[in-house]
Amino acid sequence: MSAPWAKWEAQAKAADILSLRYMIQDCVDAERAMRGHNAEREGFYADQAHTFRDELRRRLKRRAGK
Image 1 (cartoon, rainbow, N blue to C red):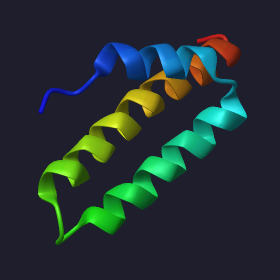
Image 2 (image 1 turned 90 degrees about the horizontal axis):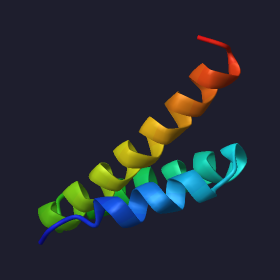
Image 3 (image 1 turned 90 degrees about the vertical axis):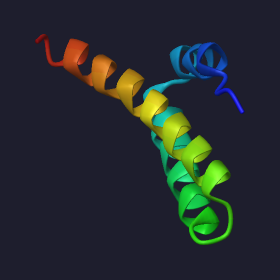
Image 4 (image 1 turned 30 degrees about the vertical axis):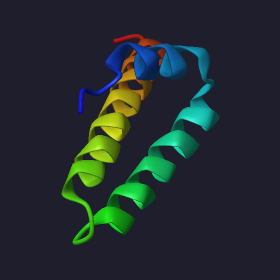
């Protein structure tokens, strides 16, 4: 299964910071729920969370002026 990176990046760019934090937590929860049941889906949610975290990190870095 290929990850829809472009779709996730677009979703992340369109979301505000509060929504990004929620989206990340939702992915983390889904990843944990898949542990021991479906390794492919676990990785899918981990990748999605990583994409959202990258956008959040970029925004917070810009906000801090770094």
